[in-house]
Length: 247
Image 1 (cartoon, one colour):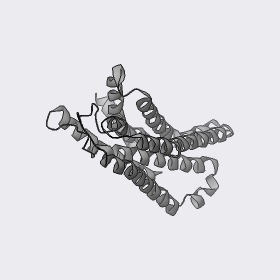
Image 2 (spheres, rainbow, N blue to C red):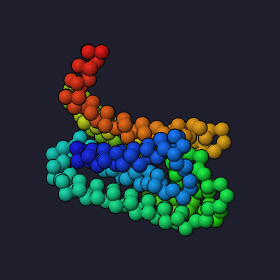
Image 3 (spheres, helix red, strand yellow):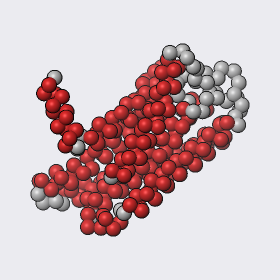
């Protein structure tokens, strides 16, 4: 789990340092958010990688609770390394397959994107050329990239939930639940903001709501993830108690 958390933290750092400085620069009037600027477009890569990584982490928690005697055999360091490498590689390739067609699009007229960063959906409104192929590609890839991992996580935690109910002692159930509680919170926050962002309209009266969700998605979620996982650390808990006591 800590091996996966290292990569999750690294991904959060990349997202924050990629979007937040660019956003502050735009708000201060030092730079403008043009459609031709594809640096913030790497948010899609972070989104793809996190989908695969959170799926791998749910499988890790499933083995730890439902098959504890086989955990060290099945989930060895080699398997963890392969899961992370495949998450980075597939996320990068899928992101690249979306960026390359956009680069060859023709942009005309107003090329300013009314959003916090160059997300995929706002960029599709900017080109003058036909975006049907890109929209079709996005729809096709969204099923294996978003739907399948999400369903896998749900089925995994259903198995974990039933396995925890079979534990006879209360302390055993509490201990088993504590091993996956942090991951459940992170998954709920991640997919909650993700669903809210891509179901809210990106134009019209709810445009400002979509911008607020985008800010939560790119700044608040990466900030919250370390806090959620740190709550299980005894040293962190003791430091928080001292701070609260002093205050």
